[in-house]
Length: 330
Ligand code: SF4
Image (cartoon, rainbow, N blue to C red; front, side):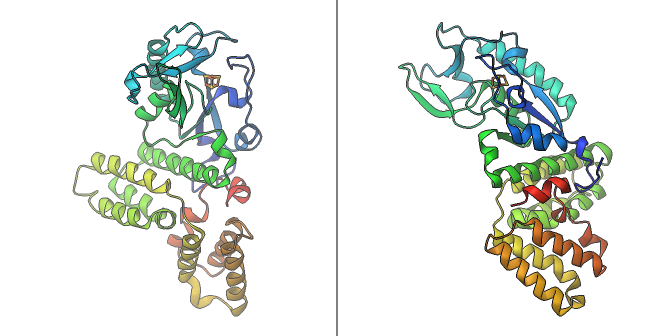
């Protein structure tokens, strides 16, 4: 298997997925809603852990439709109930109990991301319908399982099937999933103060592209790693690191980062190198080529002009599986 996503092996990356998105016939109507990007593209690069809350908690296929209700109009997740639409049978306690047991199991599976089915009263993450006592819906809820998942693992990258059609959201998800996998591996295999400093160093340009202010804050935090309680520093770092990567970098910021990286070899660049670089950056800036194009050129120039290892090791240059990145970088 390739070894090209930083130094995370592709199939060491595990993503939980709502089982119906993988083509399993587990939906209320007995069908599925296969998401082809997951099954035909992403499946080549990561391992999936399929989960169907409703079937795994013991409901049949097919089954009656269910929905979320808030009898008193409250948005508090603890006051929202999940019921069978026709009969009003309340299944909230069943799914909540099952979810906590399942999350214990998933904690051991060490997931690096989760893709959930939109709009589902069990799996939906964003803008799920919640009905009031009069039967009027508002779009502000979360499926019962999704709510338990995001509460237990607040830094876990999560996305929904519909949003994955947006190329920028999709790439952001990939960047975060592979970053989280590298972070989890650091915790499992090293977890030292020096390891944290090294981790931060190789993510410098990825963080500068995403959120320069947070990069500085994380730098100050890392400086305390040798003197303060390391577990506490790591917990704060994980939260800040994953939050920074949810910020969407602009093309202008990417161009700045690419130019900064080339600063390491600027003196050695020939006139042709510089002209080709300017042409490529302009094509990228104007939206005519994806980021993979200038990135490939910058990687080539850094390597051919013997840039320091510190620059060549930057995760920014290869944020996730290279074959995937070639097609997904926007
Ligand atoms: S949305 Fe969730 S609960 Fe519904 S069928 Fe898909 S995996 Fe199962």
